[in-house]
Image (tube, rainbow, N blue to C red; front, top):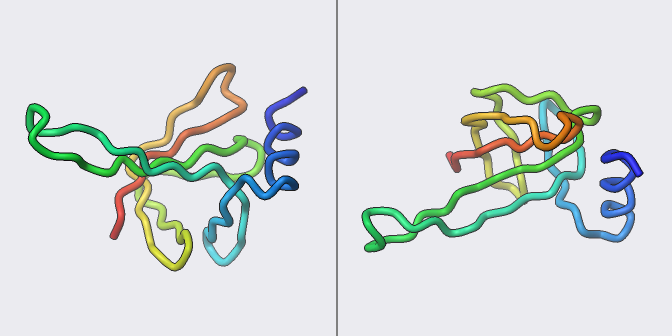
Length: 92
């Protein structure tokens, strides 16, 4: 099964989050895990967006909207064989 087929199945099951980019909407895996910072004295949110490379092209500086909140792309990295991407986001 290719990555896009996997994500399509996840979207059909309601497991992905709608993301608005440049007026269009695509469904992606949105994560907001806590990350320990300041030697464990504080927690910080590390917003991430995973998606098939064939569905979306993001670069650092792009803005995306998720559930009415705007985020800016900080970095985009390939995952695995390069058919999947992970974008690191900052909440604006």
